[in-house]
Length: 151
Length: 151
Length: 151
Length: 151
Image (cartoon, rainbow over all chains, first blue to last red; front, top):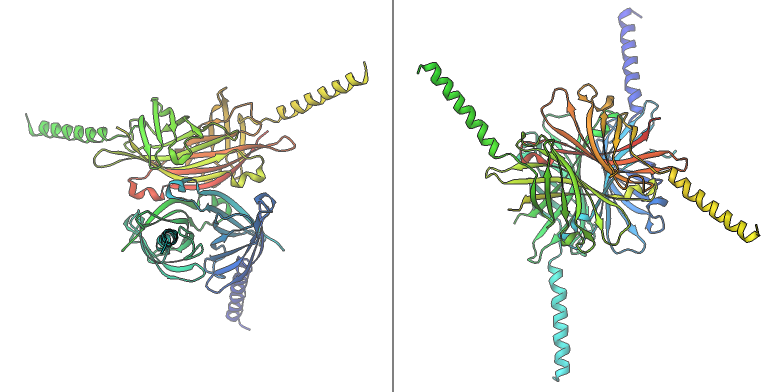
């Protein structure tokens, strides 16, 4: 094997390594996640266009007895192509004894650590239905959530 | 027909009127809307489960030359059953010259005025993709939008 | 008078005009303001360093019967030098029957219209005291207010 | 001393202990704090009415080279009386090379752990001066900070 062929082979090998490493570190939202407030989120179905479905199980601090497992729908940016995609999802809360509708919109990004661990950083808005525009001012709460993958 | 029967018929008629009027004033998100900052939103497809699709056309103040018509996906509460439903939708911005991904999550409620006019009151979060968790703190902007229906 | 002296005089005159026009349109927060939700705010004391004191009188939609006139403290950017200053102020709510402390932080900017009318655009965070970090997630509401000057 | 008197004395002693321990665990904002993003905050002067002054030193992620040590002014609820007071403060950013004014309003609460450790949980709004109401929509960022005391 000549020196030119060897260089080519080396270049190809390096290219493969370069390709493989980020591939392993890409973040996909499918799977089970735990929030820093003890809630659990399961993304059970991630489609090719980045849209996903799942469910949200509130933790004890969220008033665990009142809130039931609630459906979520969302979308992640360029599923499988971007290493640290932004995402958005909405939870429509199923409440045991309440007639007031509640929805939470999460907006965030998935970061991949040097060890390959994925972390979701999100800000959220939580809205309760109001009776009129005059009461709209107090309808919305805000906060942050950090999710880590449950293995 | 006796006076008692007449009173009953009147009561029934009134009850029907009371029932019919709010029926006509229910808010559905389908259609064209204009925001208080001059943007235009078209919800072209509202499904029975409340999910909807459409597009968002930014106004001049939003940097009109940079931003292209962008797709939106969302959901409204109990489409057709609740007079003033809450809703949530996400816009994935299509940018002419930028490689930085941007997403806006809107969370709001549709209010119906005494004249039947619908108004959407929403808070939104806008996120630009960041490079790392250390830069995450500056990734999110917040604001409000009010939309009125374009006839 | 030579041509050079005339040019100088003209330049001075123009400089005066340029100076005088924005001078008239500068925004100071002192005075009485009404919010878009019907609340009234009085900034009674604006100091040279931009700090100010006043009081906030909630409107009917804010639960008028519960909330008493509440003190506010804040600061505006470069009082008297910047035509459209940013500002920040905090209201410590005085409540009739509640033991839960509440505070609202407003952050905004004063805009001066072509007609000289001042408008305050602000985002606010409203916090109720929580019992523990586990309940902190639901402590904060968010919204916007627009104030116009009461003459 | 009879058994009844002894029981009374014991009860009184216990009551005193119960009283004294939370007394020691009250949170005061004076001192030095480090944020979860590596910023440092010094509250150098806490007055009897709860108002305080200090300075904010940004960390590397905040663009350390651009931002200088910046003054802060704020207020804490019922200084010295409430164990876990809410607070609010504003930082007026001193920037090396920028003519755009920036202000951050923090709103939060000090929590005291079972070990007596104080933690500040805050949401903040960061505003850059805009040129006109039409550009106001993009002026405000939002996020959270958690501060722990530097010993």
